[in-house]
Image (cartoon, rainbow, N blue to C red):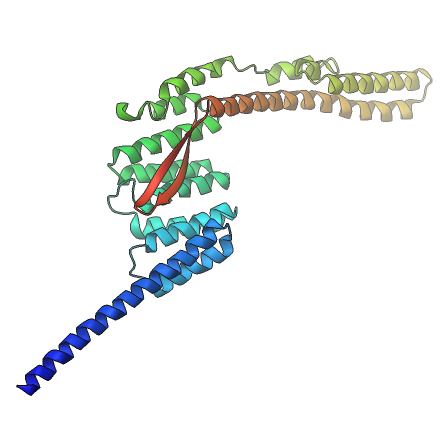
Length: 310
């Protein structure tokens, strides 16, 4: 009888010991994750990365590991180290993002941030390709609509107005108001009224020195080109008139270079003018119609924050 009692006591002791160990382990995990979160909140991103990595190393089975990986990526992103951010977010999508998920999953948020990293690294093609990968993986309406919206804006940034409209048109009726598509469509229709200069016309006008720059509203450059070319032409004429053929030939050669440069500069000025006007239109479009999507999270999971400009 005493032997059976001893066995029961041993079982109970083992059970409670394991329970205590589990509680201690959970407390340590909470504390470690809290350290990382505090550093992130304080914008001490290098320290935050170290603490998140320590959390992952010591507690690899904790349910917050995906969130920790995501926060490592965000730490690098906020530090403007976009290449390392891309690596972190890609690790999350490769490990957790190959199955069906919803907008509350960090793997979905990581896909969006991968595209943001590619945009920061000046690779819009890869940004679009990544969003298409997400479209292929997810049947979640909200995820798909956000993909369409983001792709549309990438095409806006590259002045591909028709492609942008095509992707905005794919957004479900349920989310059209959320993304302010009616306002966006109205503003986007104004793209046809962007005042642009014809580079070919600028080159033709530049046959008369300064006229090409004048066409592009570059008045100071127009005056400089006119005076410089006129001065060199007059100097060459004077040299030849005084039988200084060597000097006249040298001045003529220099003048031809400046004359050709004036034509090329006028064509370039037209392109610069168009880029500036187009970028100005895009910036105005952002202010008037863009829904700013920022990735964030609460204790209950990931979320999207919508911010509107009025």
